[in-house]
Image 1 (tube, rainbow, N blue to C red):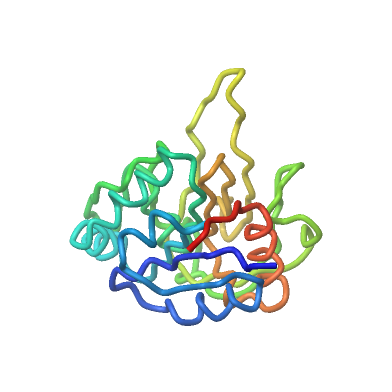
Image 2: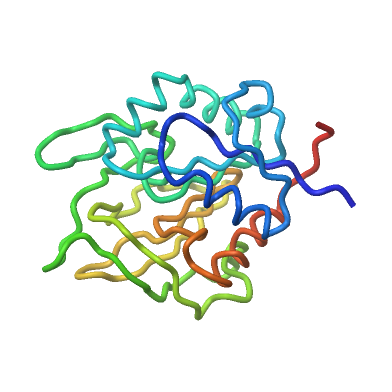
Length: 215
């Protein structure tokens, strides 16, 4: 059986090769690419991101990666954001007094964590919503976080028949979102590719939900 094709968006952010390797272990035909046709046609798209919110948004806009993400989502095509790749999906990032417009796929602001020591670096358990696909079978596992900023509120209010997002929370100083599953768009604040067997299982759960494209 052919492996689902997962494009890892190569737009200048770091830590992409470990994501490619983890996705391959999890069962994907993972391809690091900036080819626009492949990004659009792949079964899944992963958007990694490390560093500052503004730097990641600048790199996405410079490569027009933000347009590709938006077009995939408009067509109901799966996208997974990781770390700052999750943060930039929100409307705004505020880092050290600097406001940066995000992609606006979700309402809300990414702000500095309310914690005595930053960055938050280490392993945390999480609290997924009932019915989570990403955390199926790994609800009680720990995942690896490295960050100082996060989404500390969820503001997207949907009315029936729309399906509400599935939210996963964790706490470091105060609660913040560890993951979101919202139709074709999913994201994790932690690094699945650095989270050992639990992270591979999470990626495999996401891959299992993908369709198949002939590439």
